Image (cartoon, rainbow, N blue to C red; front, side, top):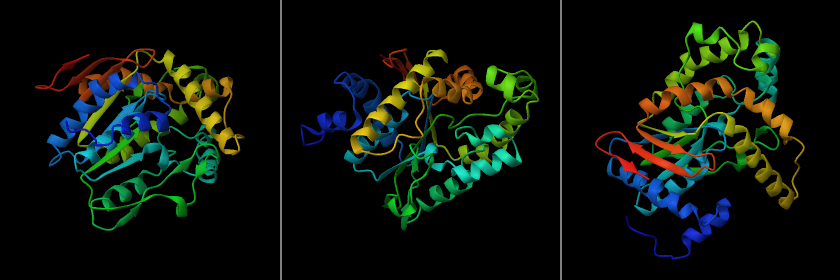
Length: 302
C-alpha cells in the first residue's frame, strides 16, 4: 500500500487520537489490510459498517481507515450512529410516552435513523451534505451550523456504532431480564420489547444498506465497563483542557448503570455477529488484536 509522503503523518495521527506508539502494529495488521480490501472492492463496497462494544476502538479504526483510503485517492466520509441520537427533549418525550428508560441515549429507538437514511442518500449525490454531530458532554446534538460539510458523490462512507448491524431477538430471548436494570425497571418487558421492535423494523431497514460488515469482538461483556470508563475519563480530561462543562459526564456508578442499557444487545452481538461478519477483528482485554479474519478467500492471522 502506498505510504504518505509526509513521514510525520502517523505520529500526528497518534497524537490527535491519544494513541500509544504500539498502535503501529494494529495499523499494520488491521487498518492496512482492511483498507486494501475496501479499495480493491470500492466498485461494490460503498457503505462500510463498523460494529463493536463501547470502547472497542471503532472511532479510531474509522479515522485511520479514512486517512489511508483518502491516501489511495478515494473520497471518504465518516459517520457515527452516535451522531444520530435524538435530543434530550425528544428522548424525554419517549420516556413519558413509551417507557422511562428511553430517556437514556443508546438503545435502538433513541436515534433518528430516518434522518440517517436521508444523509446516506444525500452522500450519493453531487451536492453538499451536512454530517450530523452529537455533543455527548451536553447530551444534545451540536448546532447544525457547526456540522462538517462534504460534497459528493463519495466513494466510501465509514459508518460506525455499537449496534450497527444488530438483529432483533426472539420473544423467547426477550422473556427474562438479563440484568438488574431490566429486572427492576422493566419487569414487564415493555422497554426491551420496544427496543426489539425498533431493531426489527426501522433499524433493520437502515442497516440493510451496509455493503461490508466489520465486527470488533470484545473477549466478553465484562471488559466493556472498563473500556467505557476509559472513554469517559478521556472525554473529561479533554473538556477540562478546553475549559468546557463536564456536568453531564458520568462517574463509575453512572457508567456501570449506563452500559446496563446496552448489555442485552451487546451480548447478543458477541454471540452471533462473528459468524456473519465480513471482517472479524478479535480483541483481547487490553484491546490488542489476536486475529483478523476476512471471509474466504481472505484470512490473516495476527
